[in-house]
Length: 70
Image 1 (cartoon, rainbow, N blue to C red):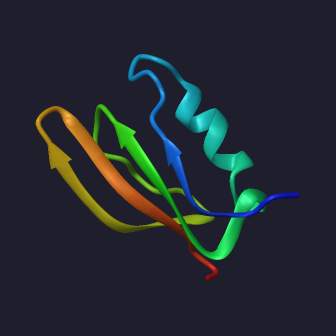
Image 2: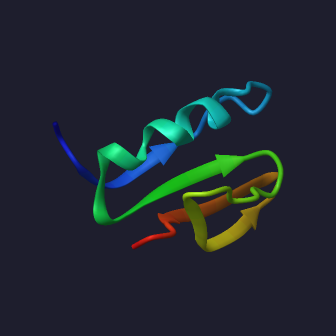
């Protein structure tokens, strides 16, 4: 199984795909890896994720997520 340092997640804003995809990613991420997420609204991190960095560009909120236990 391939592990990644960075995983990009940019689902269509009017979909529920972000909540479906995030639980699948921990097994694909290197221990020090992160997930880059773009979303219409400000993201609230749920276990096992923490927001490492975040910002906003126009109407797009973006953040880097890391696993809380890393």
